[in-house]
Image 1 (cartoon, protein in one colour):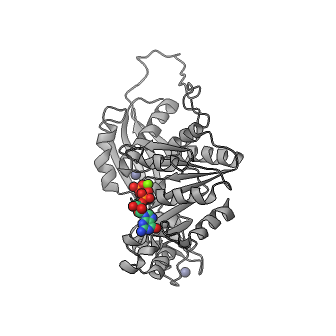
Image 2: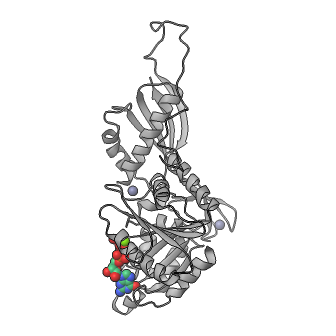
Image 3: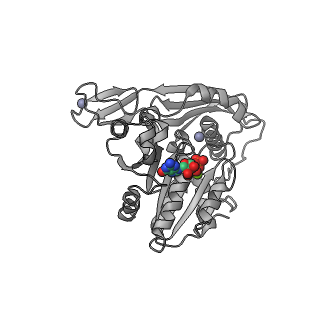
Length: 245
Length: 113
Ligand SMILES: Nc1nc2c(ncn2[C@@H]2O[C@H](COP(=O)(O)OP(=O)(O)OP(=O)(O)O)[C@@H](O)[C@H]2O)c(=O)[nH]1
Ligand SMILES: [Mg+2]
Ligand SMILES: [Zn+2]
Ligand SMILES: [Zn+2]
């Protein structure tokens, strides 16, 4: 049973009751009729996301949804973040990948709790899965929950998980035009991290142009340039967390 | 992939409505998909029959109404058409246009029996 969504509990509502003061012969079961629905396709996800958000608020859990294409450096970034903030902020991680437990194991190696969600064919996490993962993780109050979404610059942007901030990680080997090619993601993000800046000398990536493109699709997006593995400007990111938490 | 999971959401909503509105079979599904939403109508059509197989909406007809992108310019206040989320205002050229229409991904109505 899930404490947030209650989905393991028997259904109590919506039992269709219908008074049979007519015989079933009279009742035209084959008449077509129009039903107005007017419901957002993602309304169910959005409802779960709101429940998650309420839970996070009540328990003072600051939740980040990290998104990027595969290999931009999300797990490495989280591992270094946990090491840097150790002793200051308790951190737990939910890892989303189609297959394997690899990323959760990398997080656990730091000593932080991690839960792996394997999405199978699905290319994104959804709010219902996050609700269950949160119950399993038994998060403490006043903590940071980082959700690493499935590596994909398209779909995860449409699925609200109940997070406080969406963070998109773009590495400099991917090309500076990604914000224009995948505008929905950059439009949805609160913060863009430009990662692997240590590789700038070797690739044709114009940081200024990338930021300009990102602001074209999202004038309010914040930007931090850093190298996770070399540590350049890494504190800008951990400061951002401490300011926003 | 994305479209398949959206269609699974559509199916859940159909099943909920079948209970609350008392119908057993869906003959037609009408969706409203905005041009600015990241959904490809062709991919929805392609996946629809697969996802609806062996459900209350097996063999249902799918109709997709597309709505144009529209926004209000924060700078000059005009309502302007949008082709993407990041088009500048066609009247004054400024970039801050707030989307007012075209993001929809909705189930509008159904024909049921
Ligand atoms: N040079 C350099 N390499 C980096 C940096 N950050 C990460 N990497 C490398 O990039 C590769 C991918 O990193 P991951 O952290 O696994 O990327 P990810 O985004 O979690 O990947 P998926 O979970 O598969 O989507 C690894 O080999 C990292 O060592 C960086 O700042 N500089
Ligand atoms: Mg990873
Ligand atoms: Zn998807
Ligand atoms: Zn204008």
